[in-house]
Image (tube, rainbow, N blue to C red; front, side):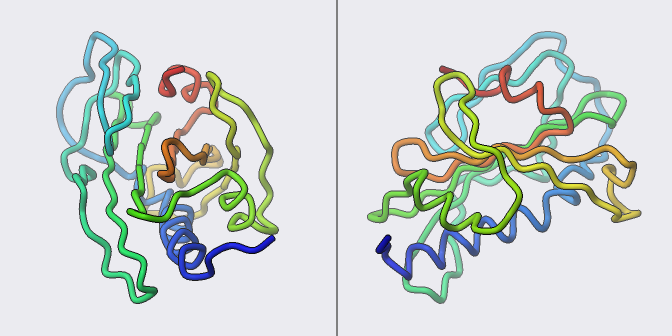
Amino acid sequence: MKFNRIAIIAILAILTVVLAGSASAFDLGFLGGGSSEAQQITVGGIDFNIPAGFTENEEYKMDNEQSNSTTGVDYTMSAAGYEDDSKQNAIYVLVGDYGDYNVTNEIVEYVLGDMDYEKKTINGHDGYLVQQNTTDSSSLMATEQPVYMFVYEENGDLVFIGATDESYFGDVIIE
């Protein structure tokens, strides 16, 4: 397979940051009650559902933030983080837009490489399910509870959803 090496490096950079930092992204401690109703949000131009009982943490909100890429491929990231009142359940959504470079699931699979992932289709979106365990004692996820990530492409953009429970993906991803 031949891919644009610069685009792959840029995609790998964002995935590495997201996958390596996913546990601390779930350390969303803040005050406030969860929403009593499910809510529809838009991140990077893509719609998602957030289940009832989750509240947004503005600290993890990004809106088209430009990368400081040294690869020559500019990209922007948009993200939102949510947590329930118990602070035991969290959802994090990130969309990476690589401009003229279209991300494909084939490229995502190539970038994931030897990582332990499972191909999965959720609400009509083909992607890759990754489970990560953390031992970071400063993180909300410091328990033995794993963090689940679903990575896929939509409209040429990289979509990353992280959650403390794999079952949330069916609620968050819109068909």
